[in-house]
Image (tube, rainbow, N blue to C red; front, side):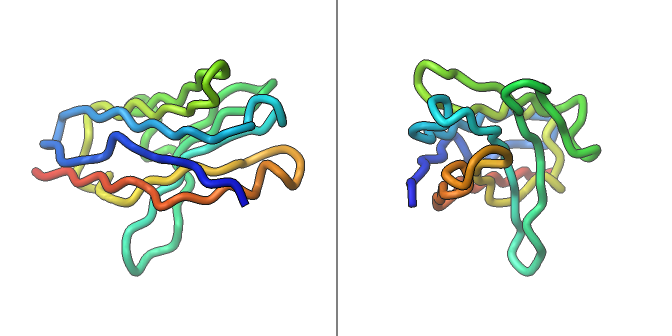
Length: 118
C-alpha cells in the first residue's frame, strides 16, 4: 500500500476557510483520479470532491460553490480549498484514488481533522 500524507486541518469559525493538502506519491505517473472524503464518528464515509485526469472536477452538493479541489502534478499533491465553512463540515478528511488502475486505489492515510465552530 502507498501512504498519503494529509495536512492543513484545524479549527475554524463558521464562515472561515481552511486549505487541506494531500501528498500522494505516484498519482500523476499512474494517471489516477483523486478525491477527498470525510467521515464523522458513527457515520459512513462521505465523498466530498474528486478530480479526474480528463473530465475535470466534481463536487458533492453539500460543498458545491464553497470547496475547490485542485492538484499540483509536479509534486503529486492534491488540495482542497474550503471556504464559507459550516459546522456541518466538521469531520476527518482524507484523500484517496477515485479512478484508474488498481494501483490508484491502494492509497491510505490517517486523515486530517477539521473542526468548525458556530
